[in-house]
Length: 136
Ligand code: TYD
Image (tube, rainbow, N blue to C red; front, side, top):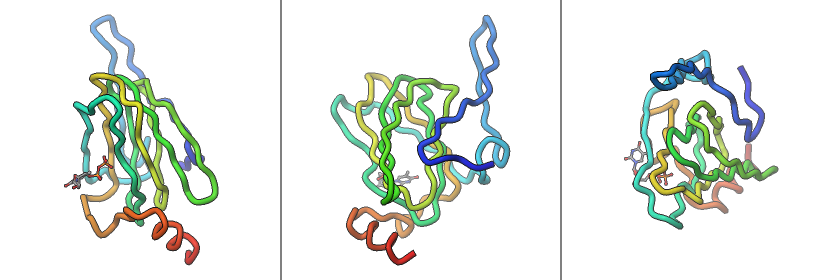
């Protein structure tokens, strides 16, 4: 399983008159074991999230409700993806700067993560991130 930079993948959608269902299985739909799940919600209009990159962390981001934009930057290419379907996921690999913006009212950003939270895995300074990329 490999993902292109900024690729949005379609997850399975089980359509049912009682409501739809989508699932994600570790190592089948994401190329990692899921160690952590977190979600962003109650994001005020106009607020931005993200603004960091990670040395090791890989993630799948899903707009389980509403919509938002994710801008990805790996130092070579930059792409903005609009997420607005609960059956679609955006893979965010290692060493990728991400910024999330334009959250719709009531939106929820679900993140499946390959590692537990570790502040030392973060680059929170963009220039430091670029410098680290150039030494790789
Ligand atoms: P951060 O990753 O900067 O949020 P986002 O990228 O979504 O804007 O995290 C915000 C704060 O929450 C920061 O103080 C770290 C803390 N945090 C945890 O304690 N555990 C976690 O799993 C995450 C994702 C964040």
